[in-house]
Length: 410
Image (cartoon, rainbow, N blue to C red; front, side):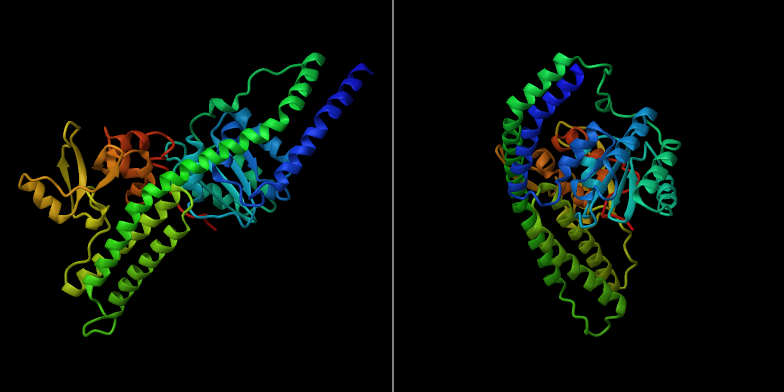
């Protein structure tokens, strides 16, 4: 009887706070917007299974808890996110992996679709594909995710993050329960205020970083537009064939995509899609130029390390930055000639609080910009010993992410 009275007391203390928080959240600006990927990443650092509030019809709380218990007991780095069908899919896995910063296997149920990605050290690309293929044959989300997790736990390498270990169990004293209820009552109203303040600070920092990037990206878009003009290609000109017209169409599409992506960018990581589109467009232009000149088609290579605006690289050369470590970097033909003649390459510099600096020494804000050009696997190695390289070498950047980045699959 005494225990029952305590439970009633706690419910009476906590229920009004929960109700008040619900009202506050319901009236908060943007409360109906898609959950920010940073919030999902934070949740996955605490538990292996995340179910979005808008997707609870796909997987109940009890089923999610059982799935999380299974993963935690196996002590394997397997993550599961259940999201609504209309959740934004652009670079979803890339952004999710970056936000969690944990090496592992990530499975996402998005509406009635399912896909997965993994770090190469955890599971090979083919292994991920096999898991996805097997899971896609299941029915509802509960069956599918349990099948996926069961197969994954037999396949993955590595261990679960320490943050999942909440430590200690056992009985909780009546006094502790009453104290907990009192703390909730005293601090519940302030919790929402602190959360909003932190969110606003994070949003302000993201806006500041995005504005720094906007200057550089706008320069890149303008430079690519000028390349299109200098090319002076006309689809109906003598000698033009379907392959040339297709190259030109892809370049034009990339140009328009880059402008659209930048106009829609709301966070620094959104810039990655912009520079990736520009790089795709420049490769199409190099193919078109080769066809018009009757030269062999170029192989797909990374852009020039010193300035991606120089276009696709033609070779890897040895280069030692001032006071740095010797490394192999991809270079364009012009910079290869400069280096062979003992001259300095034409390096892309950006504005910083210390003046103009090479982009790799301008701070982590330029990580998404560079990542779109070079991808997650090659760039950290190129930037060893630099400010940007130090940031990208960590797990949050996801170098060598075996399943690949990009949009949500089928």
